[in-house]
Each structure stands twice: as C-alpha cells, then as structure tokens.
Length: 68
Image (cartoon, rainbow, N blue to C red; front, side, top):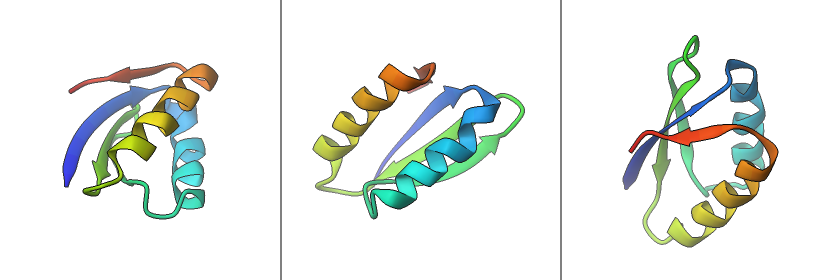
C-alpha cells in the first residue's frame, strides 16, 4: 500500500471523498486535519496508474498540493 498526503481547501474534502467512492477501490482516504484540508491517501498495489490519472484530472478542477 502506497501512502501519500495531500492538502486541499477544506470545502473540497467531501467532494474528493465522493469521487473516490465512485472510483471503487482506486484509493482509500482519511482526513488527518480537516481545518488544514490535510488528507492521507492509501493507493493499493497495482492502482498507481489509475490514481495518477485521477490526480491529474482532479488538479484541473481544484487546488491541490502533494505533501509527500
């Protein structure tokens, strides 16, 4: 499992959760700090390509910062 952290605007957290639920199994999500918009993403083995494509599209829609 690959773990990464991203930061988004607080109001975008539920939107990202909704999208990840729709893309069943692409990644898990956990809110580390809602005030700061800090999320932890768990990408399962073999889903890296799908996650990178998803992340690329998401960057076109919202402001997003990869922490690590």
